[in-house]
Image (tube, rainbow, N blue to C red):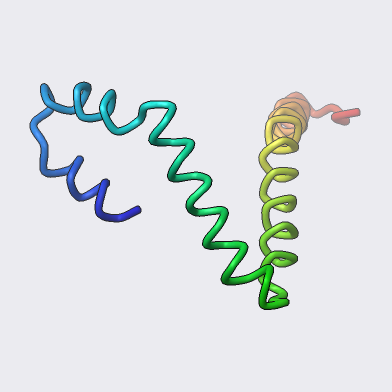
Amino acid sequence: MAAPLRNLASMKVKDVPNHLKSNLSREKVMSSTWSWLYKYNEKYIQTGSIRPLMDVMLSVGFLSYAIAWPTEIRHLRHAEEAAKHGKDHH
């Protein structure tokens, strides 16, 4: 993952769209995804590692936090606005 980012950082801005078009084609993304999944399966799932369980738990935690964040920030802003006017926020 770091090598493509280094390549992208060293490019001129006008060359970036062509580079992205050639490297982000559907076929390349699909083949690299399947390659990563195959390697992940061999390294962690077939060996009985606890890593896949930890990955799922962390992913669910981050996803739920990302989904809940807009609601929480709206609630916080409403509470701050109500406090500014000396009212209860409910």
